[in-house]
Image 1 (spheres, helix red, strand yellow):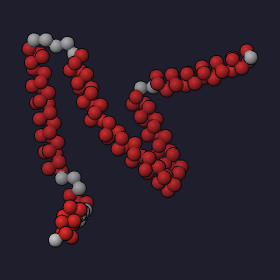
Image 2 (cartoon, rainbow, N blue to C red):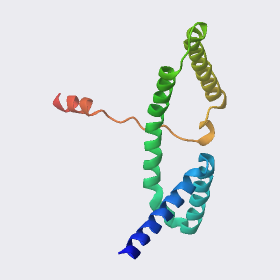
Image 3 (cartoon, rainbow, N blue to C red):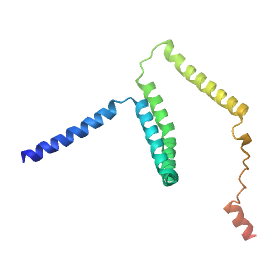
Image 4 (cartoon, one colour):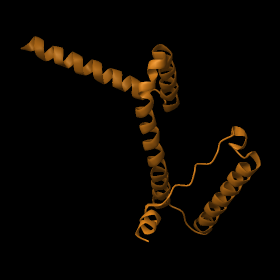
Length: 140
């Protein structure tokens, strides 16, 4: 029984050591490692990598759906936990509003100047018939 217990302890220690080593790598390092791993797997699978399209899109959509909520939670948490007093506390909402307005202005200006997708030759989708209008026409 002692051999079995020491074997379990060694496996647990090895797993903990590997996880601890992975978590000790900075986030940017883990992202670079994941990018390189994805590139290698994509090159190795070639055209068979198409089976990963659906899970990849799902992960990206989930991240896109979570990002605004996480950012809002981080901002609210920062406002709640920050100890500000006096004139600095009064300036903070004005600076936040100014920052938001500048970001929106820059985004809209860049989008209108660059006009992404303009030269792509894409045609707009055909308008679809609404079910309610179709039902109303069939009743008349």
